[in-house]
Length: 299
Image (tube, rainbow, N blue to C red; front, side):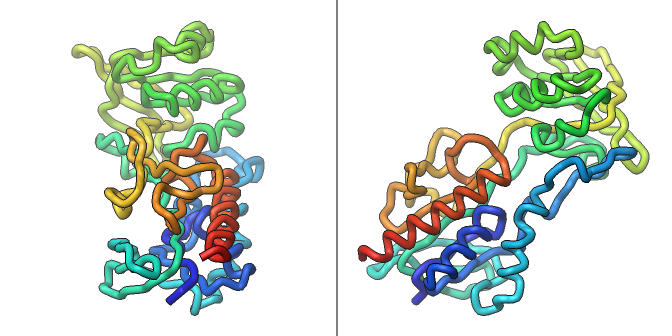
């Protein structure tokens, strides 16, 4: 039996694993990959990405430490978690079973897709799902943001501070009546296309324009990048019914990353913390590992 099993190899999971190993815990990381979403980065024509601190750079050292520790990782997906008398039993997709006294869930979240023609063709080539991550690159450039919730409004607002022009394609009213939404409406370099729906992404090697439609009217928005901000879907299915989840399905944690079930901790984008940012996930992973360590000292 392991002291601690960590599920998920993104920024939170990698950091938690390194911290746990340094605490001399018998630790196992179960993950399909090392790095999670940081393995993906946006490519843009004529833009030098060295001005952005990428998630890949931040987690690179943690990943390199885990990469050669074969004994500390299993490259597989976790299928289920079952409480047992001594802790928890985890079954993987390949049918293997592992037991641990404590578990950290760091399975992250996935972006909600548009589901339109061209979206998959230009994924990470002029089209991505995090405007905040790349906003500093858009000085005197144009960008389109699709969405009407908090993520879309925050992304459009940050882009509007430096971009020449921002199109906010809001299929529904959503949060547009909030203070932030009203402020966006008043920005001279922001066009709010309320009620418009994205129909198609067009381009060459990179996404170059977005086709939108409303009541039979079609517009083509020529832009330097397209950001889809429809919301995040937490990968929390594995603990559904085991721990408390919020209305969006995120794992509810306290200040020590503990869930509603003793010995079960969570970190990163799968939880109800503020902001989907790599540095925050790294910090949360470290905190979860230290909390799990303290829990193990007391049982």
